[in-house]
Image 1 (tube, one colour):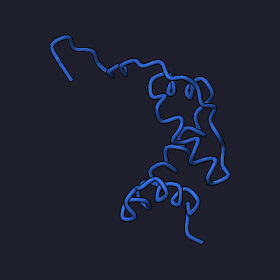
Image 2 (cartoon, rainbow, N blue to C red):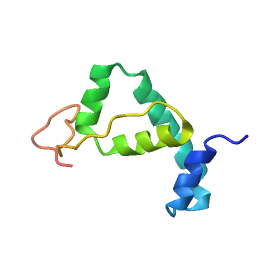
Image 3 (cartoon, helix red, strand yellow):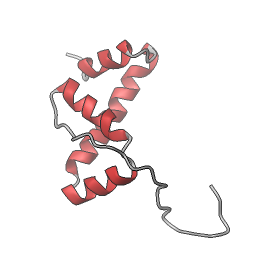
Image 4 (cartoon, rainbow, N blue to C red):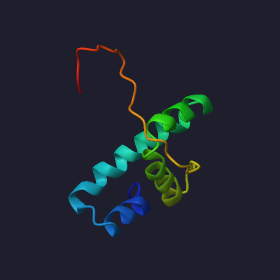
Length: 90
């Protein structure tokens, strides 16, 4: 059995190019695994900043029968840079 067939079908059904679904499924799996390994506080901090990915990893978990993440409204904010230099712009 090929890995991530259910999620790949979700991607294909949403018009993701067939040539990209394998790489996308592997990438989302790695993100999902990393989030599952975080403690609750780290995960909440991550979702506070990058809340848009919650739906993606939740959909992956649902499709593959894995851990799910509670969707919640996202409060837009800029990610905090590792270093803050007032002379540097993004």
